[in-house]
Image (tube, rainbow, N blue to C red; front, side, top):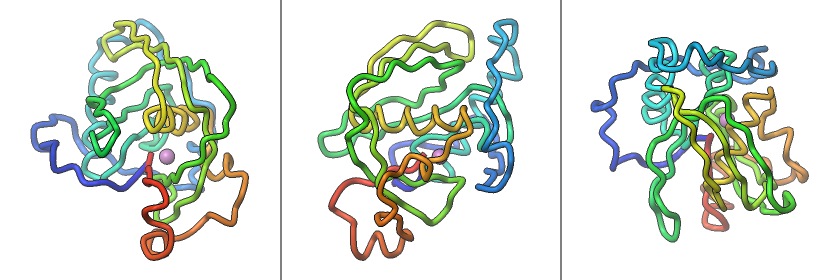
Length: 195
Ligand code: NI
């Protein structure tokens, strides 16, 4: 998802390289991405992919970025939640082969955008809580529970691994708008998200 200030992160300290983000219409965004085989954990391929996703996400002001968005059809995504208002910060994180357990009903509405769908925002219903089981790029197991905005970012990024774009999840297309109009007419009603 796109669009927030990253003043607290020094992108020059990140050693990945920036990759080009593919946009809606590129078929890779509609494929089911492949699991990363366990023998690739800890390899240069996977470490570089994780670093590149983080660097590209920060430089393009995203809250999250999935591997298919840089043309790599594998089940990996990166995200970062800046601490703002009553939101707790979540340090930059890369998840490999994530498995989600969705808790509750998908009834929490919030603004989303997507770096692969530049310029648009819309209200998307998401589950309020998600339990996550995944690996880091070295193959260490990660299990945790996320709520609210954190859970939203994870659901948006996970969808990219299944070829799903946030527009597919919208239940009321009347909230779809351009970023400038969002700034003018809708900002402040909820915080935006871009993943
Ligand atoms: Ni996205």
